[in-house]
View 1 (cartoon, rainbow, N blue to C red):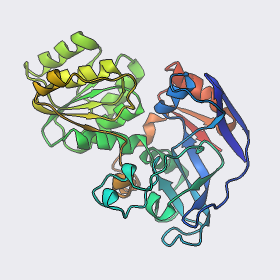
View 2: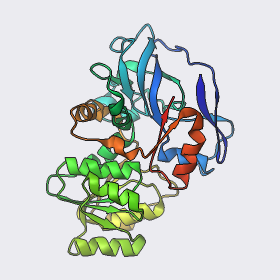
View 3: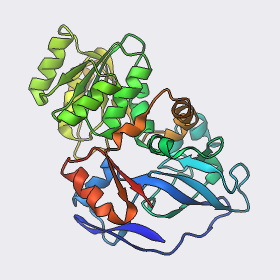
View 4: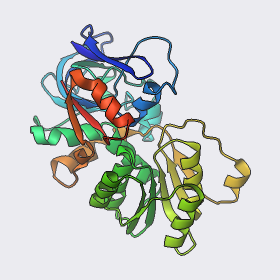
Length: 338
């Protein structure tokens, strides 16, 4: 089969790899219908996340079940399925509280940028669709696997409510789908922070009411101006840098809510400063599995179209072009088709 391997900073290759096999009786093997490049993949691609050996890449996936282990009960051969970037048994105490991405048996998926994929804990990780979706729905269904699920968690963790004012920090795919999620949850005002014209346009299409181009202190001042000096009810931090976290906390009103779903790099919080903000702070790896059935239904019912974040489609063999385009911010998100 063909799979994607990162050999070093900006050295990403598509090459022949061994086909995955059933290892545990709870495994499933799926043939990939579509996969993609995630913004978090750019951290190791840029050499910011160190690694010591060639590393398979990819954690967003949907496709058809080809084989299942002897202990798999609910997932059947031939089903079209979507799974999370974090496996889960969906039965342990942590999963029952809705935090499947911290499941006691969790594994983080990799090697999904390939033609086939082994999925551990198949019964708890995979969600089948009713029948096989049309080709036009596959990008949006793929988005539920991570970026939509993460954007939804960002809005949920930030306590977005009908009539609330929301700020979204970050104009990547997660931030843009945070806008979509906040809109669907009934937010009245959604302020997207973006400097990129194409991303601003999509944010407005997804439901943003305002665009703020400034960053840092100027960005915070603009948010305060738009909210009559108060700050936002909910702020979605979708980047993972010190600047974005600081900007998010300071953009919230006293007693407001900040979610942090961007994978943090070099982020440090000042306890005393946080103490006096009265801000609620919640985040982490998104429990995508909690939301998957609902999000799949929203897509299949035509209520949302998150697949619009894919503005570049490439054959899997040209995956390196997708990484380059996202690294250079020429693409929001690259869809890969085997």
